[in-house]
Image 1 (cartoon, rainbow, N blue to C red):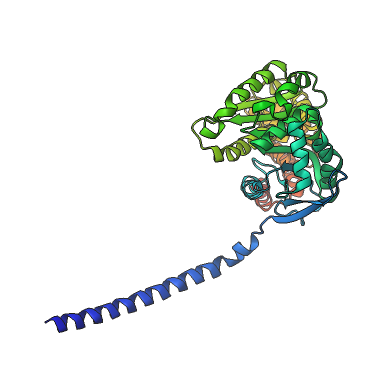
Image 2: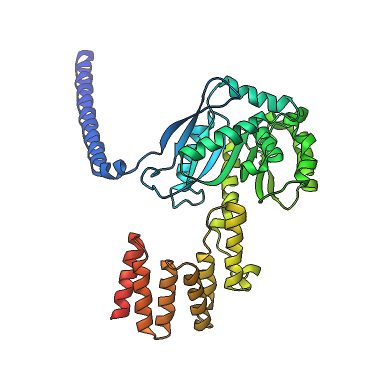
Length: 403
């Protein structure tokens, strides 16, 4: 009986092994075939390019090799210029480039396509500059390096648009604040996650009151954050002091947000701060003005003036008013088609190639039975875009008008 059972068991095991082998072979074939079908789509996705920027400086002997992540399609978009983000922590490169690629791949929303620059690991000369900024009051050799060497090298080698972000965590966040207080013009926006401020780190607490009060130039943005994690407890007192200093002494040139992420993990802080900081920095670009806003209620001239201020004073590159103008026009179509048409025409006077404005104009003409004008406007909409989605949409609409 035992012999028979053992023989049966052995045969059963062999059968099971055979079945498992066949199943695994079939699964492999399915995966391979699926990959083969999907291969063109996968191959079409190109990872952002990583580059090395070697920077010379009279302040140290050896070149400093900064790691640079270029946005997807940088080499192909030869006429496009980009935002720059600097972070002094070498290990920040991977999470920043990954976050940026995800948050920018959907048309630069919410993160405009950006060149990410991170510092070399363990560079002695750069380390000495950081130590001097932290320990010697008034020492600005680190900021000299930024202004005279690093930032010009970035601008010379890459297609930058002049808008810069300085991002940092803990000690590097303290240096972000050191830069904001002493040379606010170096960067347009500053993100300081869980900054080290105790023992008057980099003399931020000492220098902030006077220098924030006297800040000049174009507006700057600051997002400063912390949490109640164990690692941040000894910084909370000085953080509260700086928060009060900012609220008391910052003038109109500093647009700031201060936030605590209590209950979250310490190592999560730079991720949260960067993501939310980026949303805040570019919010005026992505947010359409409500038609009930004070700006929109004053009409197209007011909207255009608002976006001109954003262009000239806040970002330094063009921020179009098209979507906010169209929102105003759309709100008028039912009650007053003539007023809507006037808004769309103002939009086209300011932006002669705004295909969405031509399409909106065509639709309101059609609603008032002015088909000849509707057809002409839709043709202009089609002529001013090469985007497949809009080409298909406008072609279909044009056919409807012509019928």
